[in-house]
Image (cartoon, rainbow, N blue to C red; front, side):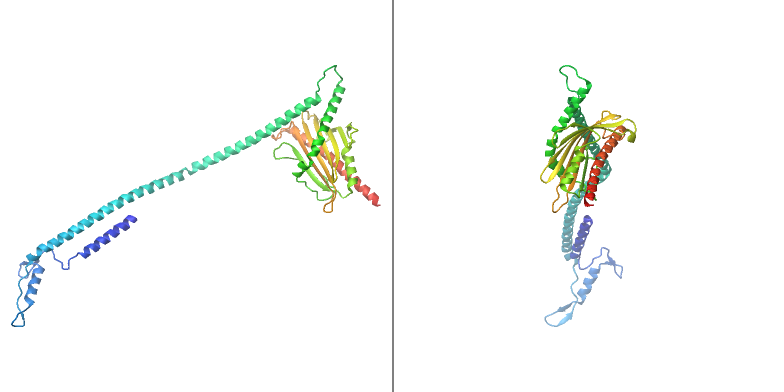
Length: 409
């Protein structure tokens, strides 16, 4: 487009230049045949006619019409040819300059065209390579997702192996003490192992109580819609390392009465045997929970639990440490658990609230696999055991409500 515009401008300038130097009289190349058959040019005839009518002034008489001298065409031919030669020379020179300028412009435009063609070719190649680039990106993203999934699964497996090894080590120390001297009866070994287990669980209560504020600060307690409602629904944490449950309910009774009733519910267990008695505000129980009729088969759990009460100025805290062992069908499955029960005193701005938070770490379960039927049944048995604890708390609230009604009547 730019080359066409420059060519048009050059042609326009050349036309103006030729118009500027165009002669005022046109001289044809072919001679004109006169009336008598002789050859003559329009210039010669015109000169003769002019010469015949030009007036000549004389000194004696006025103006007279005398014939002029004939036009000497040979005298003007040489200057005219010289002028024409110079004009052609200037035209040729200017044409050469224009041609040279056009050559330079052609070279520049050719270089620019080559550059544009290379840019266009590169753009076309980039467009052609977009599908391959998109495919490569999709493959890279998919590989990254698989790598992240495998790393997460590997972390879960490592955590599971660490928990199992820790539990196996602790169980070996607790359940298989070394016998240095004479052998003893199996019942004595069992009794000493149970006593050592309860002592170990009891030693963990004070450190767990010190962690009460730190643990409960990050928990979002689900407040029940009505007072004296209690539930325990466990769910896996983000790392799939333990099951947790949190709940809060409003208690519309007096603080001291509720504290005594809650102590009776948590520090007594009519279904089990007392294993560590005589320690202030502390009680340990061992009980066997049989769910064979409800779940079918030989399904039972052997539960060891230790609970201690901590009375503070604005609250009462109950800390429980549990170890549950699977029996029969659940042989080899264990759970390590801890629970906090916090009863807060009422204030002018808030009512009395009972907060519960528990953690349960299963051992021996395949938490990743979805076809572990034995593990699923074991989780159902644990949920049934949790329901027994919920029922005991609800029964406590019902007894308190009945006592309140009887006192009014």
